[in-house]
Length: 339
Length: 237
Image 1 (cartoon, rainbow over the protein chains, first blue to last red):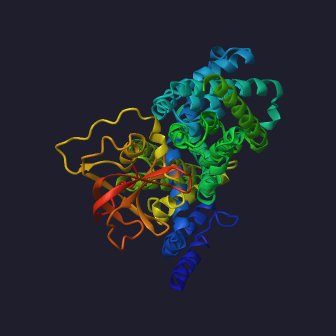
Image 2: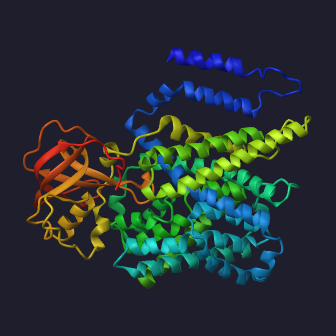
Image 3: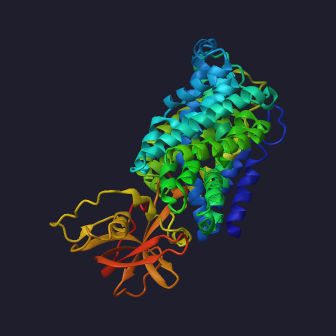
């Protein structure tokens, strides 16, 4: 190891003092810092392998990489859609399409969530683009919540996971729609615009395509960074919280529902496959499984990190608990009606 | 963060994803179908990286006094280097016995299945997935398994002193991996190592145990032979 250390230090000393400096510079630029990190990473590779040799560290790393690799394609889809909205959809379009009255716009947004067949990583940047394009935040949030929960792929996968309980599909769609619309109306009544802090998009005069590529770059780097925070938290919780803690509370009707709702927040599973995981939690009541599937697409640690990045921390701190409580209440209600 | 640094981060993330797809290592983390998500997403990121890099180079030539400091550009993007390090340098293996010993068996998900088609009579032994064997053994009392020699493939884990056969079932990505476990009845060869991949040939036995982690049933198989096999490309099921 000392040998490697010397090599990186050696390369580093060649790298830092950015040789010819015709222009004035304040300290190392990010490009040089990046080059330094890369050189360090490559030379420290044997050390990294050693560091991650322990089974728990391997398991953590596998989960972390897995969440990122699974989520990045959907994030790319989401930022590409949101960039297309920002660059190509005329500003007046949504004013014409979305109903003027927020009370009406919210349910319309909830139902139109069915047209975006992607999971929750895609819907966050799209909602950000909608707000920036002048859609009422209440409607945009309802769309953001409803879309990953009720789109066709999710409905089909829920049906496949519960082949003998079609009521579970109906209960999931109803509970998700109900909770999404409730949150929209709640925001319309109580929400304050100053909680929102949308990251500024710089103005581009290079035409629509330049704006499109700039928006993809900015949104992916931004939301992706927050996604990485969420993935690290989810991987840590999955690795550190042992499953046997769940077994004693599974039989309790109230604690069981709360336990699976909290589990949905912690494990951050993609909405397209959470039904399979819910189906495998057989010790729990059907209503608890329903709560797992309704809460998961609405709020989890990965989403909370991305929402904080897209809409600001003050927003996320209020939005996350409100969404959690609404989703649990909606699942209990629909569980009583359907299951 | 400067524009050219952003281009390099996009290049690394996109390139890392394409490399996972090209080497087949993505199967350690996600389902096989995700190949068709990773490939276009990685390609798009490379295109964005190329355009960003070209713009940075062009802007720098045109405007010599502006050295490219983008104000308001995301600092949080630095964190994207973490999955790059994970994908390219650490490259963790698929989850195996360490996880399986800490997670309850998953077979309950199959409880709702209503049909268990007869196994073919002209194949011997009949290859089955662990999940299929476990579901037929537990929820159908082994009716369709009787009279057949069964072939199962999985890795070894230890429940206390007792070796078991297991395979990880993945719904979405490795973060939700959960094991199916099968116990061995009869003569068990000595010296089975945890995480070693084996092919087990045997017959159905009504013996069942319980997984103490989640209280689910663990079916057993009457062992005829256990032979080591190389680790498959896709370790998950």
